[in-house]
Length: 344
Image 1 (cartoon, rainbow, N blue to C red):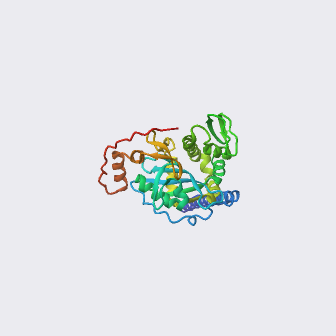
Image 2: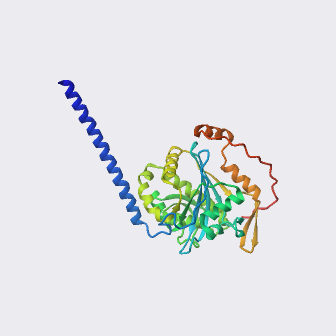
Image 3: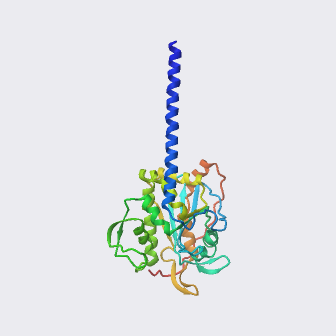
């Protein structure tokens, strides 16, 4: 009799636990859906509300050795088809070490664009979207890109305000106001989304695009830290809703979740950054497409490969972990650096 009572009590306890779990799952699901659609309602008719229909297919390679390269493009459409890519970056994520690297390609870098001859690299996006920009980076720098994400600047401020509702603190070296729609005073300031957008777009000083690239990398690093905080994770569903109309990407949900978990696991890892062209590897020139950065292509190609590569020991561990075949090492030669002066 007592045994039957104990079994009945145990079954009731299990049922209560299952009921609590079920209610929690329903509550979390309802919260996620509600927050997502609330975010969508706050977003406007963004340029990329229909993912996958704006650009020709992106022919990226499959990730290898647990390493992912994502082409990040900041687009200023302003009602134009495609528009110009004001920001070109390669985000590198290592699933094994959780390291994050960010390489910025300056928009006036003078390269050969397939089918269009020598041009500023940002023209590739205007000609034929992310795929032509991928081909351009592959042809000139021999970099394999797996995914892309295009962000319309119109949505940057909204995304920032969701990730960091209390603002992002930056140290502004001097007043900034020309052509950015806001006035930013010098000194340490806490910026909201609209102000941070102005901060990363400003280039009307002696540093020009060089300073802008540095500020863009700084802002993304700080936004990354905010996004992986507890507060940022709670806001994630709403953030996805707000961001959806302003981002076009081919990154699948599984990869997004994998990167998200990795960012949390490796939140203490500092983000490494690089600018292409590197110092002392280019000269300012004027061509039929305007003022350009005439680069030492081989030096910058090598610098980008060195920055994105994983050393031999780490690569071997990754090969073992993912049970991947080993590829022969690529032969490299010592490069002779051309004598070019950098002007900033």
